[in-house]
Image 1 (cartoon, rainbow, N blue to C red):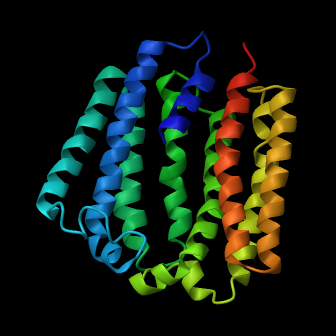
Image 2 (cartoon, rainbow, N blue to C red):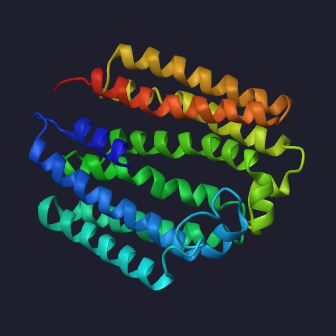
Length: 268
């Protein structure tokens, strides 16, 4: 979240980067992101206790009480939003509050009810780049919508692959995930491919909209193709090895894409 907020800030800066304002933006983003994570762990402590991957977290392991966790989450969340409102601007603070609310109040409870929760969760995951853009004074329009869409779509194959790897944990936890409803992984593979295929042309929009240059365009095309190929392999057989490949490609994809954006930003 902090990385994407920083990239959004740089791309939204029209007359050079204001380092002081960038630091303020990142401090507020860190606080809200940490508060969001803490609230999520507070609300899912029963689920985390049933999953091998998460049962050693502070709440299910008993190292922290729910009351202490709630106080901590509330304090840093309020501090983060207030900090952004006072030190950056109200739009960025509002976007941070929306990120927290949509994650904790929508995505977290929907994980127990519908496998469509992944789509909902991708919204707060993509909002920090918009917050960074707004903090720098970037104008609302097609450019920031393209950045949001890239972050939104990138998350989906990334998380589908991770969920497939830990599908037994999710089944044990009782969460309504696609991997639990998809015993052979065929639906998971095809959904990952669909989102990766959609991401490829969307990732080229920054150049078509005049934000970045040709270096970014061809680099994004190569990265998108790698993500697409890795996702396509899961449609042939949803094995753990192929799911890990999608996950690792996704981990490389995002920082590489953001680095290309920063290095090849069109100066206006």
